[in-house]
Image (cartoon, rainbow, N blue to C red; front, side, top):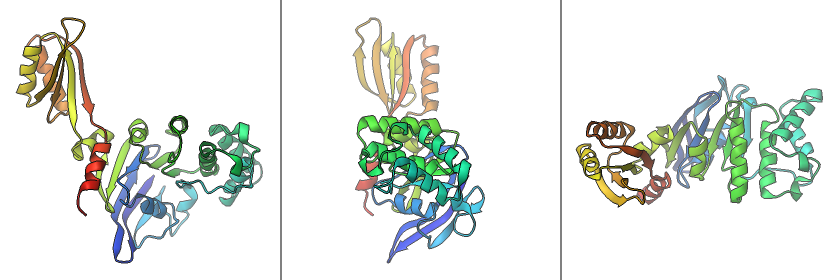
Length: 308
């Protein structure tokens, strides 16, 4: 659905974006991540046709955003929804659809659908300027969806929302999965892990990692551990050591004969499988065998500490 190739943007002598490629599959939700100053917002502005690239091209559904009608297939919600404070919710959403060429009965139908989808019925006739931050973001999303886009681009859509509003907005995005392709930039990493099929990580204007959340964690060196509960800790620890892991914790569970063990090291799904085979071979009963990852925040903290 979205292909961006070799995007470059310079501000003075500095390359804010330096050769970024993106490939987002139809119907997927792709998380776009990176520390502050990585170039995420600049890249998104080039993707949606707001900021011209110094090099590279962007295509949506095969159409070039800058030379053809590619941008007509894009819905765009920047960090702060650009609402007109005096317009009602219905008026603003209708204006947005009208800007993309909709009119008459199709426009009214699209407005009704967008308002219903974003759960805005109770504030439909209220002025945008009188709404809470959470409702304003929902209006921004409704206006981005009103022209039935192929690609929805969201830049920090939950910034400034309280926890309840974040959960509500996340549920709204989940309801869109499969209906529209989404490129989502956010600092709420739990959000991308809950919503996204794939991630793209940017640092200092370059893509440094792509893949599933698990693949990105591994590529960025985010720690992982194996947590298990077994009936024979001695044999279990022998199997763990055999797989190259180290034991970081061993605690007897309140309900005998179980013992909880935490093992760290190069923990991957493949290693977990080898551990399971070793435990079965040695006759160790297993109540729990979970692969747990450290949060992606750990990787972004390290990226921020690295010298430029």
